[in-house]
Image (cartoon, rainbow, N blue to C red; front, side, top):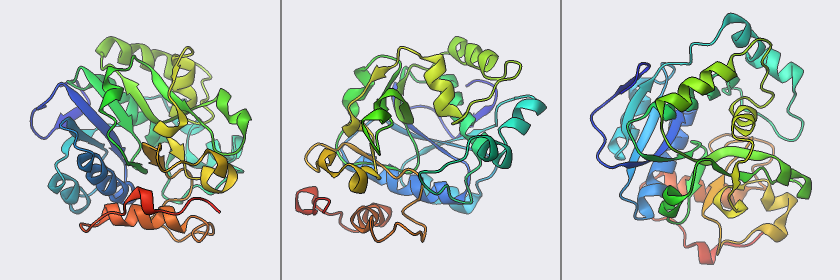
Length: 277
């Protein structure tokens, strides 16, 4: 394993679903994600990259759900880079106006997901810890690098921008080194952190269908795109399903679905869930 990563045990498959956990809140999200992935029938490794901001008590449920835990250092970025991408500086220069970022969100941590290119796997599918896999997505391991879905949640104009909550990758130390060299170049500023950087690094990214990364705001902004029969990955962008927030009642069906996966009981049959009103 490469410098900056400390795994708990060896890989057991050449393929892995990978997520990143940087605090207790995202550990709670990952707990639901891990169960959702395993319920799809996948036999790929489930990997949780975790930073020093996650305590042992928060990691224990992830280990219990079959995750291979890999302690992950933050990237060795410069002081100027860190200052530009600190929460207050980033959100001041590029404010979020469409949704509410939770208080635990630390933008600089997002770049740690680039360390998945150092992992000891041939093929990886990354999923943010605030996603759920509703159907088997093993086919994504056969997709090329780099595939991601467009960032669609408000209008057709969203299709020009990718969302980095779900993507395919091929771990390679040379790719990781090239990423570091570009990431922290003089004056670099990545408006939406890893998402902006990855779209720049992979300008010819292959587009996945929105069903592979359906953002929760589609529920009320673009209800005609919603299809329980087709959605493979549901992504709780902006407000999280384990929070109390102003949009909770509008998203109640999705939040209740997430809570079912977080727990140990039965999960709803998607065919019986209501569609957006």
